[in-house]
Length: 201
Image 1 (cartoon, rainbow, N blue to C red):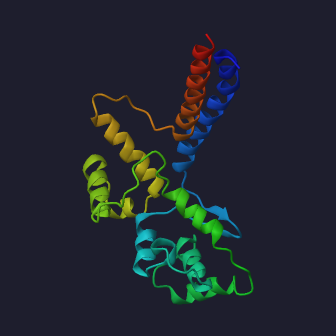
Image 2 (tube, one colour):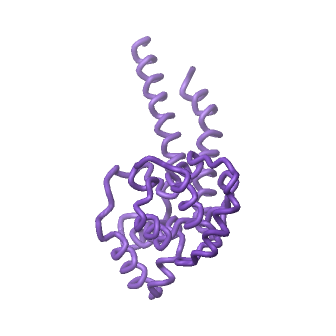
Image 3 (cartoon, rainbow, N blue to C red):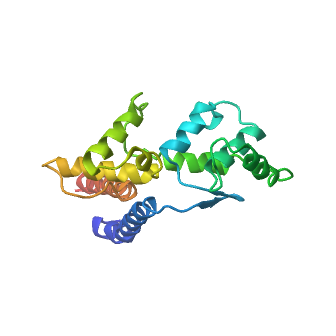
């Protein structure tokens, strides 16, 4: 295969990956519940994350997942969730009383919410919540309550835009992890072809 033939193969793949990245950015700005398995789940917010951390949820600490753990996650992430509403929580739990619950789709959802592809694998700063609130309060003048209840994926996109705006060397735009991965795969194969042609020559 020649480099030209390889490009004809990868051109639509790269375009499709770029479109997938663009769509992912758009969806990250949508505030609406998502059907995960048989339950409607709201986008992750700082507030909901703090409630999960407050009960030391196994989805966050890597502990053993029980039926109660799944129910607690579904309740905190549901559109009906109200902190301290015991009666509403019991009513919500009854809806799943005789249902078989599968934690795997919820874990995948949580991993997608904190997608860090292309970034260093490291734990966030212990003060990351305060830092994030400070960024948006300072930049946009948002109230604390609005920041804590905004979808995390939206906040991450806005933080990325703020950082790029302040970086004189970069233009406004978002990371394209899928398109970048496809381009890297293409370049690796290009190098392989070129080395083979050089050896043959």
